[in-house]
Length: 271
Length: 291
Image 1 (tube, rainbow over the protein chains, first blue to last red):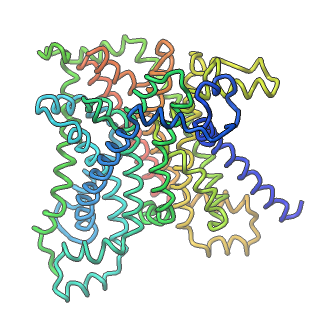
Image 2: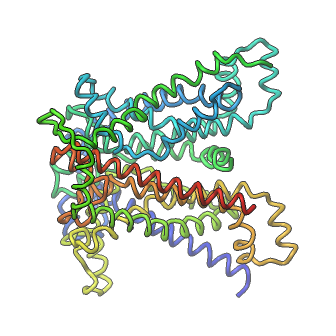
């Protein structure tokens, strides 16, 4: 076989694998556009006409509210994660102080700790202090987001040329100004990577949301989807419409930022 | 230039404090609580010492959970690592042309686990599911199954879903390692007349050993922590057949209201992640010593 044929065969293999990977998602979107009850008799059919009744059902089932709750929680958490981890990453990368390595290692342990290992004490704390639903979940989200974002940002900050920092110091800038005005703009790929990974994680998080959110009106999408499914157990079309609505915002975010992701990871992964 | 330590501390302290408050302190507290017996309804704690752990060792459900977690680790490593490596090497060779493919393989990670679980539950449905329908259309009626309702099949079915969701993520990690290998090394291998297969085994793989080990650790720890997909798809059933430590811990704490017992299960999870980490550190240490 010629080399060209081999390359062609390899690409065909990848294309087939890609098709298999996309199948469940394609099935979801197509299914969400078909009348809810026909899905159960003919799971592989195509929509006969553009039918949005499932999306109406999803909307009436409060998916819009869950979407809003998740958006608020995700944006606030990601902003706090970056706001807290960027200065820490800068100090670990560029300032010498005693205990630096120790504290960095201490924060990195968080990469491996299961959420379930802190669930009960935090549940008790939230009940005892009567912490509001949003605060109750944003706290752990931020804490669990810190290790990865500190790691990735530090790795990127280490590679910023020394001359840039020295020039800023000659201009009389302090470390805080150097961080926000010199380092952060340079580290855009790393910040984008951090933002997308944390947003995806928080948008998807289940155990904390399941345990800590008391009011159904405050539910985030994962918990909301579960209650929605419970109410529409036989209406598969509506379930698939709810799922589609839950997926779209992050997909858009991912497609916008994806070209940064490998670059942002590379600095972090090779160290 | 002299660094003023005060600035450094002010930069590090907020992050370290939040981390300690929400993770380190509760972690230690969980271990302490595992020595007590109490419930949310009756919050008076009675000292139990190692009693919860003694009960755990007698508990058949815990044994099932441990076995299932072991199966999760083994199958996830055996399927995801080679597949992710194949994708990374295949896609990494010409980035521009394969940007679409990269997006495709990564995209399941963006879908919330709950949504993934709901989609695949409908897919696997024994009566109306798309999978059984497909199998019937292919004329293989005797291969249709109860899938998630079958105690033997439930766990492998959910692991399949997990592989679908996470392989793209591991591909990204390996891709990052792959791109760190200097092009000149491949040039040299080509000049020496090494084919693609030999280049992979003797050049690419040895240089990526470290990142492959990191990825293996992530997969292992992820399999110890696994919760969402199982909770959504089977809730640990049928009759505890797909139970893992995390689902059993959640059930013990928030359905059965056995808080101390649940804290003990959480401590076991923690111990297992620590064990996995120690093994990994040993392995990388030996790697570096061998040069």
